[in-house]
Length: 514
Image (cartoon, rainbow, N blue to C red; front, side):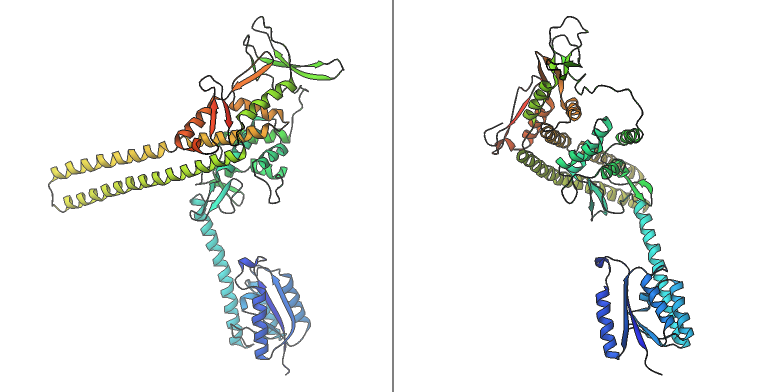
């Protein structure tokens, strides 16, 4: 009987080389070296990247058909589990051995001969391989169930979150999370489409890997992602999460209703678009400013804003939308800060937050240790009483003292956690608003400008064709921030004027300009 020729078969379970310990290249090198030492003739080499857990591997099937068509063929592989991890493929190989078409099987890590004993050992090897796959799958499922019980996120963090390898969960990414929250708010209020929302996020640094704005489908998926309300997903089903939500459930439901309306828009009467109507109040009579179309001398139509004059005699005149918009943008320019100052603000704020966090963690640790010490004293007291070492009257007295002390410590810990850094989040929101103010000075989206003025403006009014609105919250937060830091002593201090009169002009003095 002549020596058989061999089909070399190399396989790995995934197309990702980083996820496979034994790569195909390593298998080929070892098998070729083994064939050289054993003087085996390799007829054809077969290799594929596909799991053997289920039947249907195209390259493996091609090799099986080639064996059925030829005579005295053997198989050379690294281990039997490279050939089969399921009962069907393992049965095909054993059946070909029984038929005499597969006359030899060689493995560097496993012995086989076409004898009853060899076939029995091969069946055991295939059975072990199948058991390993089945057991691995069950272990993975059990791990998934445990992670779901703990409320952990199971895969790559969505936009606005980051994976924390220490906690094996996700956590919000400061500024990105605030931009996403603002995006939800803008869409819920209406007037901002998916494309405009993508441009808004791109302006704040949230883009694709190529640096282009996110696609409309991506933005829509983001607006429908329940992860932002603190839920985790597995196989299409949502579960309670243990990570911090970015938005409230109410805001999420508002956005879902807005998405539904946009998918099936109802027929409405055509209405004129007057973005600033009802926003400003007449400073003379207290009436609201409305809008209307007017035709100029050249026949061109313009949008004008005027007082409704429903509260009596009023001498205020019409104001063209172009003039009103220019005044609003000029006001936004005055309250906006340049990028280098905002970066410095965020940097110092992060440093302060870290320092205070470390300090608070130390205080919390001390409180926790004091509580544990009190509980230990209580346990020791109970043991002494049960052993009869102290009388009941003394036991009751000491127990009451320890319980009162521990109750006070628990209350102190609750108050400490509740207080937190209450000034940090408003200041971060102010930084975000300032960035948006700078962005809106160059946009033509009038609805976005209106929404922003409604959010941060106070007492918007018009007198003598001059529009104004206050931003007292901004100056107060700057003042609060400066009391926490020495930022005013840097080379780019914050100056503010008109404090206490309902108006504030925040200016930056990095290079002498404002």
